[in-house]
Length: 235
Image 1 (tube, rainbow, N blue to C red):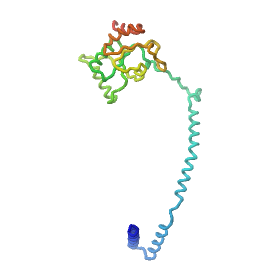
Image 2 (image 1 turned 120 degrees about the vertical axis):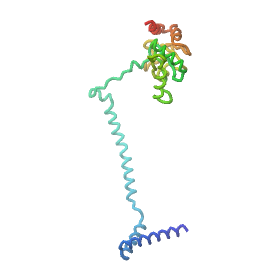
Image 3 (image 1 turned 30 degrees about the horizontal axis):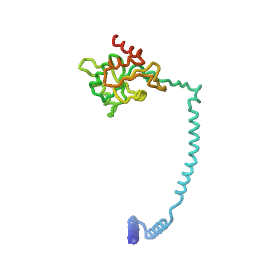
């Protein structure tokens, strides 16, 4: 039934095309010739030329891949900084000294109670000790900046002259798992690309003030570093 219906539709389409052509001035002989050409073209199998052309293109692409990889390796070797020495002035990279943890640091989180953070910010201003956070808030950098700005505002005319350093590396270096944590580092220890053992720094954990933490840290193995910080209070 499906075959008969399709044949009927095809005959109807062919009939309609003949009528349409007749309406624009074709003769009956021309219509028969056109119909014959249409039947011949529909009965011929599709040309294999496009398929062969596609296969040829695919073969050429596969052959080009090794050549492209070879050229990439050659250019990579030419652009190697060691190969460019003497031709291009390439500065030797150095570590940023400000990226090294030194002295006394207080590790905190912006999710701590606002009263605790404000108190530590004021103490940080007095003793010039940096407060370190792991990263920005989940809402993004703008939300983090607005939150910090609100923490620095006080009832006085001038805001707190302090802030926060962002360093997930320092959290990892000292294995900070809770906040606040107060850390004092021996001079020349725990630098970038160096191991940092427990004997290289002292730690005080707990919700205490910075003066109390400094008093405990002064009894550790780095009293000289802590005394330097305590002297800032008297200046």
